[in-house]
Image 1 (cartoon, rainbow, N blue to C red):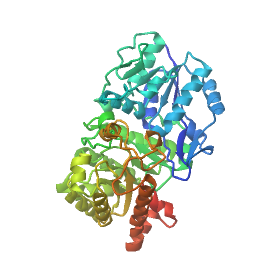
Image 2 (image 1 turned 90 degrees about the vertical axis):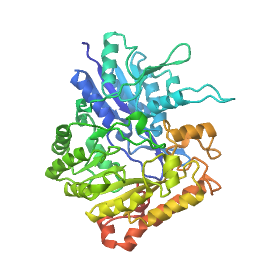
Image 3 (image 1 turned 60 degrees about the vertical axis):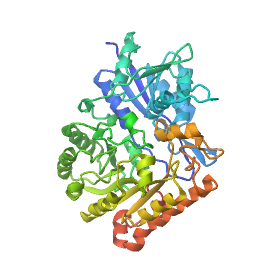
Image 4 (image 1 turned 180 degrees about the horizontal axis):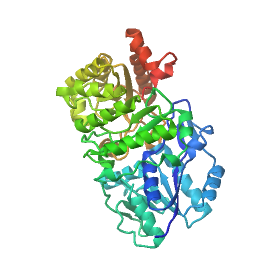
Length: 501
């Protein structure tokens, strides 16, 4: 089999000028890289935002472009001289730069095969397939596939299909039936092959962290958790999938509703390898639902207790799993080094949970979960979302009151973002629920995009939610100074209280 030189790029990001912009190694890109390496290809991972993190170009309207210049990027690409380039666009704030990367590559050499991947294009395809034509609507398009600088997109879980595609295209074999392959064809329509779920995730390799600039990520220290115990963080996924079908979340489409666990031995090896190679001091588990399978969780805790590093669940866990023995579960987590759990509560109103979010959670189960976690010595962070389509002002107020009286240590009150690929996004598109002058292009830079009951405009609602966050997160200092010190340490500033995300 012919071998290829494959460059995997993560683009510059458009961030908030005065806000917190997070960056960490891409688990998906590192997994794809290791599969390619195992098949004999020469692989380079390059994060243009990381390598140019100190370079921030003002875009106006409180936006900055973070990352390298086009000239620096072009030099890096030319030096590697790739046959194939994969561009990962995980979120919409990478989209502009992702398309710019494709343009730079084709300027260098039109024969280089450019492949688009990541959640952004996968979710765009979901929306395209679910689009309902109504009177006066134009035919839907997939904007990313309209860019001629992308030769193909691979959607869904592409850890193995990406390498298969590289093998076929380098060897001149037929790739037309490849799962997840998407492309605009000459007649103006799209060829979109069904995706293939990786049912056996035990076959996934340990991500190729040796190919990324880990020290660069450590120096920036902007990993997922709002208040990490260390800057030397290892972000790990033990499983893929979530049994829930929340209407604001992309996980059901991207990862499926079946929770698939990796081999425990591989997870332990990944962590120990991280400690050995990068002097890791903290683990942050990125699973969508780490606690869904109690047996797997307890096995993980047994091994983490031997390792002895602090860890947390910044992506959130559900409040009502294993209610009968929830205290035992939290105790096992605490004993193994967990210092904080994040509970994804979302709302304090049952109608909103049931009829708008489709979250299988009884409001009465939230407070006991918080108390059970605190009882064993865990800090408890909580997620709440305000501004759902159809949520009333009174219901938002009820959620804020419920949360502030829940006993949680800290709070993230987020404004609902209509993420592409979700039922809520499609509702917004069909009913045109945007504030005047705001749309999907503002997704990562403007908190409030959708009309909200009781408010005259987005700025007013954003200020309301900002005030709620600050007020809620000040309570711990006032009510329990020792516990506040445990969470934030000796040195903190008001940003630590506001930016609990």
